[in-house]
Length: 294
Image (cartoon, rainbow, N blue to C red; front, side, top):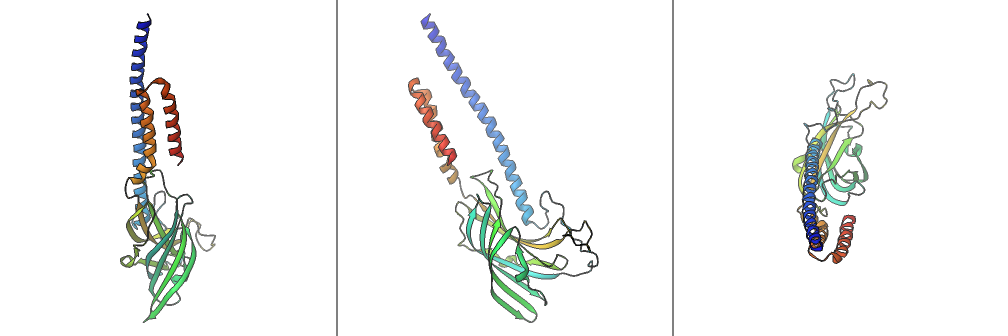
């Protein structure tokens, strides 16, 4: 009886182990597939959002086409065109935790005509200008040139759902604070815009840059009684985008190597005496928790 019972119990353990392994494999496969689908969808959404931010022919998701109709009485007004260019010299700080990054850049304007000073009236959209210094100003034959050095802190909500294989689009967007798009238009001087080779972002590499001009509408007439209630104030907006991404799988392996090692040690418990399995399981559990916390 005792030998028969031990034989049955041994077969039961083998069957239970096989079923447990199969359940773990099936459950892990299903979970892995769902996570893969979510990550793939997040990647597609990221590409669409990045394209919408920088492509002048694509409206941003969830937003209607920017209103381009001038207010009554200004249908025949011709805007003043101003060429604008940018050179990003430094990125002193980038904080995913605080959803901000800081840019130190040169910004220049080329225009003709009087009663216009685009260097004094521009603002950084979704950011705060920490300093604005006029470095050079020239006037010749009715043409005007102004060069500024600007330091700005810009708000950026980083999507980290694909961390540590994430990528982001950093944008510097400027628009005039006084003149709307029917009065004032930027022309991108993209052939002279660039990012300094000294710009270094820990953990990321820059793989693309581009500049564009798009209209930016506000969903209000700002209480102006002379404007229709459904009128949307629209401003020309110059945006310079910097695409950054993780260069390789090194960070991923560094972060999860301890987790894989803990799992491997836990699986060793099936090949040693039952009395020693408890210590291995506890040690592996705390290793996994410590890895997740870090």
